[in-house]
Length: 375
Image (tube, rainbow, N blue to C red; front, side, top):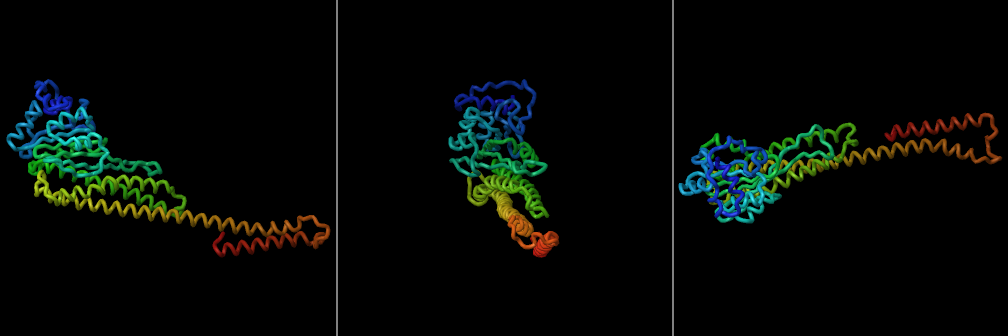
């Protein structure tokens, strides 16, 4: 049985003392691809478990505990264990085996954490917010633009444990890229941590570029000829989605800065140079998000101003037509009072003259309002 297969038995145990009871079974199953984008096809939280030495994958042993012990005794190589949304029971045995801090374990299982970096004795615990762009044919007031997930990373001197939450952000392709570069992978667990951070930040860049296209489309609609008819709900929706993206990106700046500048035992100084490059990309994304926020505020204010101007134009038109209609209303109202002694009531030319006066008055007012732009 592969090392990942034995690990599924390890996760069912509550304490390290029971790890030795794992049966060493022969290879009776066909190889299963555990790089599934979500959960393992065998129903466990284990996605993959591989040991590396000098940047090269070591053929899987029969027992996870033996593999870890051999790596620790030889002081060479490390184990990379990938999990997807593990439960407390599934993670208990792993936590005991790698001596993980209970607070970090709780954060990894419960999720919904802010991006952060914490040190527990010899173990580094990092939280990354993953984001992906939700494709849509047309942006509406209810469209989901950004979807978030989480990746928790435990880094020790001889192990890397990744815990992923969400339906996106699979690390399978990233693992393949690292295995194709043994020289980089030979730098140890810190190289895996850098690759994950770089992968997450690259996704930020792609998402912000896609969000910019949505903002450009909304901006074009607002400043079109009938911009006042644009849907303000689309702008508010973009601002809400941008806020979710901001919550994922901005808090990560401090952890990445610490990885790039502060001395950390499990992070080789050579790897810190790579984290500085990640920090530069993250700063660019953060500045871009801030610019998007300001731009959306300007677009929203411009839209509200257009709506206000359109309402004023409507009120001027209504007022102008009311003034035009007031002329015949006033004249007809005076001659509709049914008094016996009123001038021109029995005059032969009274009616056409009154109609003419009404028409001339209405025409003068209409031309005046048209000249002033009210009609």
